[in-house]
Image (tube, one colour):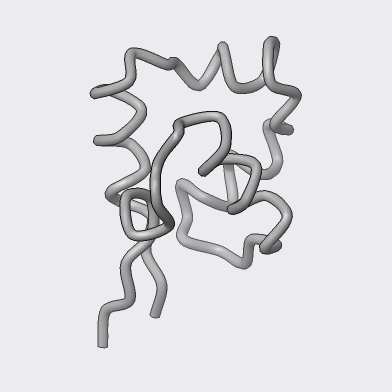
Length: 65
């Protein structure tokens, strides 16, 4: 299972709020809800988050057995 717990830590480290993701970077509230629930996310969204946060994929997502 892929979990996005690291995303919330990275957002805090980069001082970027969920509100800013929605308003400034046009990440939808639905996408954030799926991330909160560790749901299915497109690679497009993962790529966009990595670009916004200037980070690697492993800084926002983790595979857990």
